[in-house]
Length: 120
Image 1 (cartoon, rainbow, N blue to C red):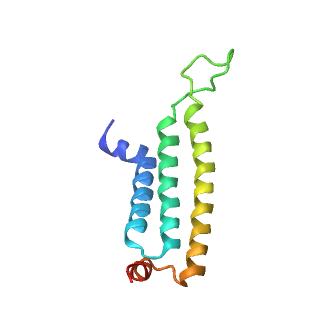
Image 2: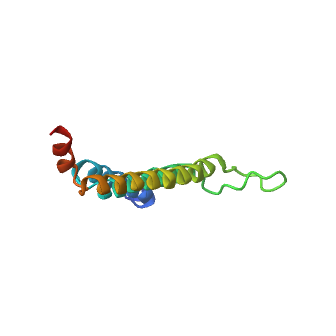
Image 3: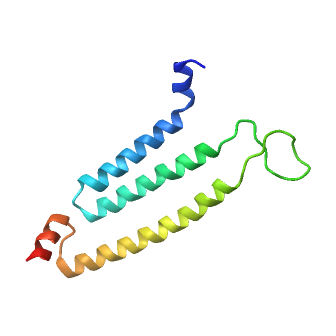
């Protein structure tokens, strides 16, 4: 396999790195709490894509008795990602609820302003 073939066939991993990078950048650089939550969700999406891409088996078939004879695809990564999606939605809901309470209490979503208010 040449380098060009590797670059063209592994584009999913480039998307994973891009999503992880964007998510981490948003978490670290943004001072707005809503943007941090969006960054967390983008980062989660990158992790989901990585797990699903890593679980892909070329020419694989479903692990059902009596069907196919080739390589089988494990359903475990897909089940784990479904569970992670549910946990991610719950985490996002709790984070947004906390942001609403913070805004009601302090009138801002800027992290720097909140730090100044906390230290005063």
